[in-house]
Image 1 (cartoon, rainbow, N blue to C red):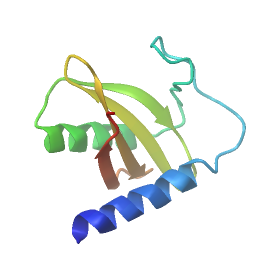
Image 2: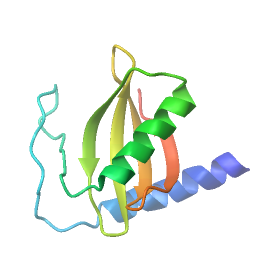
Image 3: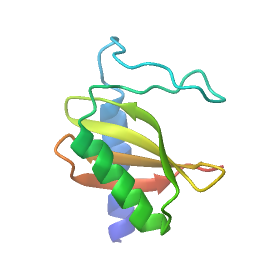
Length: 106
């Protein structure tokens, strides 16, 4: 039941993260997709909380931030796990409270 609640909250936060302005304050990061963004407006505390929670969830120390998207309500951080950088999506408040962590690997 708690996992369904977390997933619902995560999807809601993901929808809210899409409600950002058209201004892109980040820079593109070299990767296989030109759509990845690194938004410098994402607070470091939010980014660090996501990396820590993804590491705890996956029991991995091999982590890399792949994407960061800022929203006034919540931020979204995509973290790559392991040597293949399997993508995990984290939704967090800008004060560093993680709402959800989900694998987005296909």
